[in-house]
Length: 148
Ligand code: RTP
Ligand code: MG
Image (tube, rainbow, N blue to C red; front, side, top):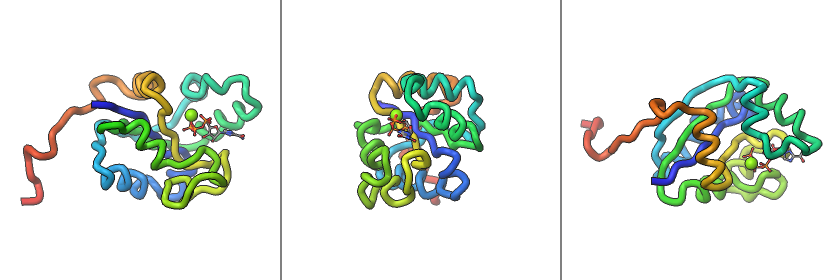
């Protein structure tokens, strides 16, 4: 099953949006297979955002993503990479539609609440950067019905 890497950025954690964001992906029908609250080192930030190394905002981006705890997650489901990007909305909140996470909760591009892998290749790379294999679970919610 397809997997993607999603992360509530430091602004989202500070604004108490972890539950809201996790809830959206749960209600959509995707399955959480790994998660942790963590601090990102400078080295990990530079690797994660390596594709933006030459961009003028790279320094700010690294400073911001290392500025406080993030909530790193791996989600699984059919077409989850593209669906999560749709649910996140456009990179710049001034262009993201209401109903998307960035459209509903963010104002400026440098503080846009959530990260999500943009392709199968980046999902694979980013999952490996943030999680060990044994931190990812495979489970079937239909086997045990814990409500009863
Ligand atoms: P992300 O990687 O964080 O999920 O965001 P994205 O794919 O939608 O956008 P990307 O092009 O990968 O840019 C990474 C992050 O850099 C910040 N950014 N700042 N000041 C600027 O013009 C600018 N442009 C991009 C954003 O926070 C973006 O999420
Ligand atoms: Mg990106």
